[in-house]
Length: 446
Image (cartoon, rainbow, N blue to C red):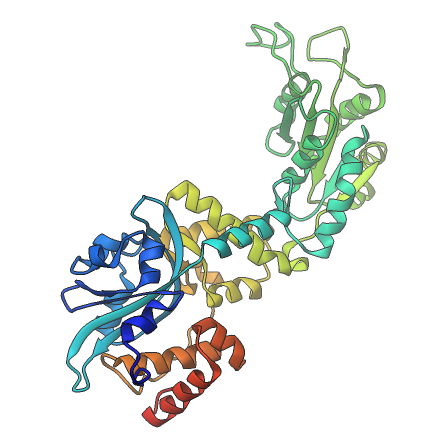
């Protein structure tokens, strides 16, 4: 499609909000518009003639260059999010689209890439995600909103709280939230897994012991009730606590006192107890494996944490949260998940709940080199069934006209056929879009 008669191509491309640059077959920059200069901080005169990787220093320049893949494979890249490094050293999130350039006779001329500054979108996304985070708990589902609404009142109470829910639903996170929102927030938060230690060790771990209480007890050792003084003691997997220890814990909850092993004097317990279990305590009580009186002492305030399958709207938020977490820990330039990978997560039942989702993202960080996590980077059990690759009727390098037509077709598809939405994405008029679509039909493009 020719440019309007009498209007220089330079003026048209300089009027665009998106950065545009072209390279020759030797990767030398041959064109650099004003928006590219604004986004990168490099003037066109400085960019022209330099290698493209010297100008952009993007997260793909060390391998996986989108423009190289287009030129060598004859395909196109549309809206791939990456980071570039400005001349002043600032990292800028951008979305790139790339295509090869060829003369009318098919002679390769290089490639063209456009890029859009996503800084404002990233800031808006962070602000939105922050609004869906409550004391490090990420979610916006109605089930979580109900819990968020009552957590401050539960935290303000000195009563024992019981957290129930399947394994991996984040019970310790909620226990920490209760601590952080309480008047005891300046005190310690101490966690004990009641199912991880045998009965003899668990008793000394909880209550401590005096020197000489048993063989090798050469000095006094404080227990977790001592360590949690003035704060919160979190007893995880309370359903696994041995019956003999259940009696001693009941005494602490009733009288507020405990006695270290080998000590004749009782001590005051200045702690708020939060217990958690993934078991049905009522069934344990009925089966005689858990004390009925202890159950009612623990069950003063009960919070049921929903499994992830009941809060699927939280999966994209949680996935984005874990991507940011592992990107910071691993230093990998990964921005998120592509639509197919996210769809695979949304289709998964997640029997392991939030913990399974976090492990899946951590696994993907091992396989994904950068950019977006794709289905093939996910654990095998989460990958969708492979689909047949669509046929490409126009292999080889694209002309600039073909690249524009394909961009128009892609924008219309991404926006579900909404013409004005596609026009806004491409920053073109409705008439221009119609001309591109008509020309795409004439060229037989799909």
